[in-house]
Image (cartoon, rainbow, N blue to C red; front, side, top):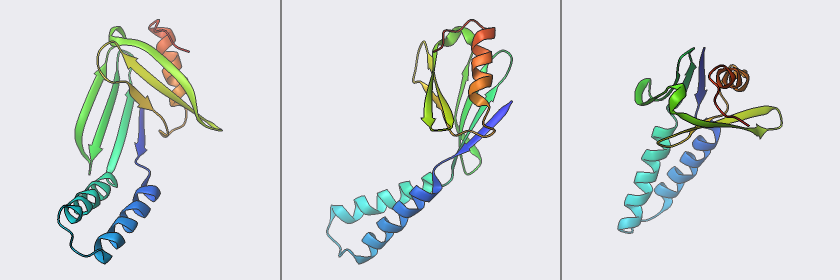
Amino acid sequence: MIYTAKSPRVILSIMFLFMLITRITTPYEGLFIHLQTAALVVFFVALFVTYRFEIRSHKLTYQVHLMGIPIYTRDLLPKEIDFIAFKRGSWGEKAAIVKPVKGMPVRVIRFTPNDVAEKLETFAEEHRIDYS
């Protein structure tokens, strides 16, 4: 099953607007103006980041897309997964952190449809992966 998530666009939009207003109203002051411009670019690009998480019978696939173009892909086979930690993301939302043997953990939160945690728990049980 394929699950998708988007970056928190409301927060990023507000930060982008505040940074844009600051950039326009601040007089030119050397390095500070370049840092503001770089921050503007980062916030603008972050608005177009989406995430894709796929649970197959034999592997997990995590992708980060920028404007529809995959910029990062991580395939995790069951033997590469050390542990899966389930936590609460908010009141009614479960989150999961997939910790591989090597590399950075994959954070699975705010994906739609909302049954990603249950499917991930089933995946862990089928492949005898430790989870809590």
